[in-house]
Image 1 (cartoon, rainbow, N blue to C red):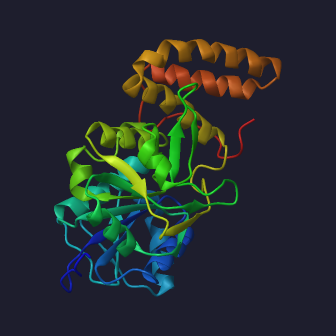
Image 2 (image 1 turned 30 degrees about the vertical axis):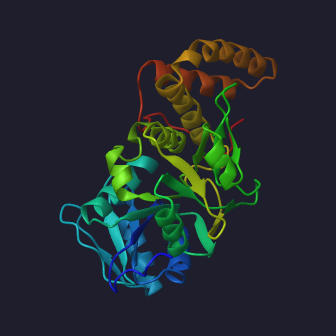
Amino acid sequence: MTASPPAGELRVGILVLDYHHPRETLDCVRSLLEREPASTRIFWIENDAALTWDETQGVLQDSGLPYLVLDADHPAPPPAGTIGVLRIPENLGFAGGNNVGLRFLHQLAIPYAWVLNNDTLVVHGSSEDLILAAEARPEVGAWGTPILTRHHPCYFGGVIRLKDFSIGFAQDPNCLEANPLSYVSGCSLFMRTAVAAALGFLPEHFFLYYEDPAFGLKLRRAGYTLSGIWGVVVWHIESLSTGRRSGLMEFYNRRNRWQFIQEYFPEHLARQRRRIWYHFQKYLLRGRIQRVLLEYLAYRDFRLGRLGRTQRSFSRRAAG
């Protein structure tokens, strides 16, 4: 049985990345404060803070919860029960924003990190359950939790389909452990900060989507396995920042899928290029001109090496 940590020892930092939705982020943070012990610190990471901080500060002040704005250049943890706020002036995307938090935890030598989407609520368990699992099995590089939504079955992460490199569901820990093409979802991703640092943290060049399967493959290639526990349950609203099935979501999914194939499965690239012409014909026959344009722009930007945040403008409404 794992011994209890010394009183006051910081064991885990929970990273919650906000992007223009401070009220929903506050709900997530409240759900954590209700469950987490004094050995946990919760970090609110404000992405695009040059534009959003005034509104977010108002939400935090109205909440009545204690919070402290932190200096990323001079890391120090917030007091127990106090939300630590890290402000990022620009929008660094999912991976870049969370990496600010991961580097902060690594500098503080906080051993564990739990990345949680801001549109989640923890409805069962706490980070203590994840720590117990991680300390019992050091060969596991990342842990997932069951994620519940209105739109999908319960899942822990995804499975890469080599046919077209779309994503299926990893619905239990056995799938994460047995299937080498599975990965832990970035929606609820628990890891050792030292392991994340050794791998260069989350791959930032994807900006949005496919960074979690890429990180999962990096972990596997470094000799780690992946797993999950049933004892912590997360409710996920889904696609709060990007819009469900929006043009913005679809563009990043498609562009980054090409980049993912090139980096990790280059032997499949030629076959996937042939498939895109089939899709163009199918969409044209169905009159889905906007879909053809989106697919073309995603592929063109990939071919031009345009990674990270796109300068293109896309709607957050459902794509046609």
